[in-house]
Amino acid sequence: MDINARQIGYLEFNYLDQSETYQYSVDQLSRVKACAPLMAKLGNEVGVWETATQTFDTAYRKSSTEAQTKTLKTIDDERDSLYSGLVGTINNATKSPIAAQATAATDLLEPIKRYDVKTGGEYQQETMRIDQFCQDLLANYTSQLTTLGLTEWTQALQAKNLEFQEAMRARTDDQAGFVKSELSQLRQQMIAAFNAFRKLANVIFIYEGDTAYATTIDQMNAEVRHYKQIIARKGGGSSSSSSGSGGTASPDPSQGGTASPDPSQGGGNEGGGGASPDPSQGGENGDTPGTGGDSGGGDDNGDDNNGPIGDAE
Image 1 (tube, rainbow, N blue to C red):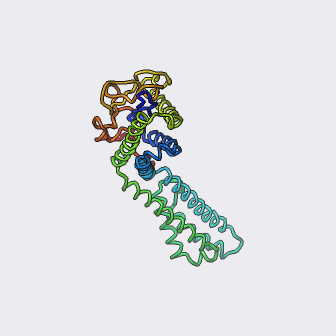
Image 2 (cartoon, one colour):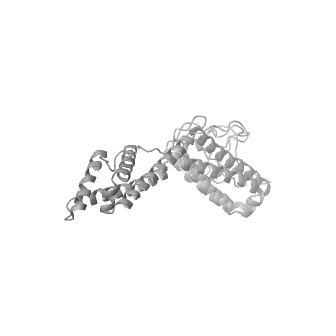
Image 3 (cartoon, rainbow, N blue to C red):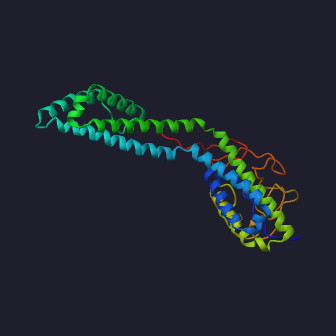
């Protein structure tokens, strides 16, 4: 037994937001998976941790409308281009020296004026008006469209408008299926899975010694120190705990006994109760994780304060 073996340091996740927590988990996972001795001992625990991380990522992406909003914007731009081109062609045709074309174009000015489509405006209103405009043209102005060769153009605009409607519906469905508290719970499951791995790994380091794991432990603790600096900048902890020197900051409350130095700061064991309780742990053994506060600060027994990235539309 090596009571002075290196230990993976404890981190207070309550001061990290959702994206920071996820990035920390992903980065630490990559280090652990590259350590064959650790994977041989704790492959199952790493698998649970990785699954929890992936599950959180999937839910987070689903809750965020950012990607879907970009898709909507792209389709909307294409739709606007088709509409503007169609109207521009009709306006130009009113000046055609070919009487039939000029007459057909003049006839089409009436539905253009009637529906008064505003490109770049409110999504729902533009979508409704383009839908009615295309239906009217294709049902009641077939000869005019044929004369100007604009039937396929109008059909293309109608199809693009339908594509936009389907994309909007998909985004709405995803938002409706997203439960904010569920994402908070998944975040806590990811944190709990990491902490379960960390505690078992630290026990292995004590009983087997840290020689075979030294590089990985040092890399992981460098990441711990980096995130402690982030927390300190948010006002959630002392920057002195991230200096790499010994000290008594951030004891791990999941272990019984008296407080001991933070093992991420070069020396000391994974300590016990005292200051800086880990709010992701509901009790001594972390059996009842909280729901997580994701706005930075606060505690992990409250609801998330960060919702999905919304869209003003």
